[in-house]
Length: 153
Image (cartoon, rainbow, N blue to C red):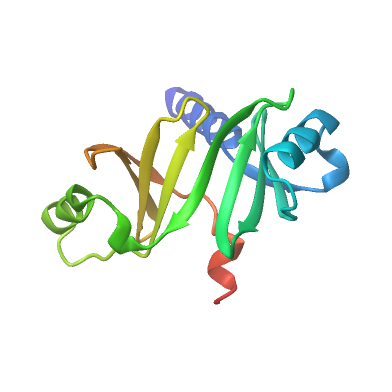
């Protein structure tokens, strides 16, 4: 019985962070308006809903970018793909020391609504999060294979 409760709790927890691809018609007008104001001229390639947040994936100046908004259209954060070499040195030092033999596949710079910067380094099937100076914050394991992995550019 105890195991069943734990499994159920974990399932509900993972379900709440699962991003679902949605149609543009399902995105609140306030979110679409905020996106259009903040990223004038950008065309959304894919909308996703994760919990109560809406995420737009698009290219900005030929760079993979995403932006998250709450249901009222308030900007939450942006994530911009960067070159692995553009990560703070402390990030690559962390990977070398703690993940011997592993390589960073992709890197992103995340900026929240207040201007706080974090970095994300993808290693294997996990995302390692770092603060603006490159200090390790946390590890997030991907629960689903992203469509981007399927399409090679």
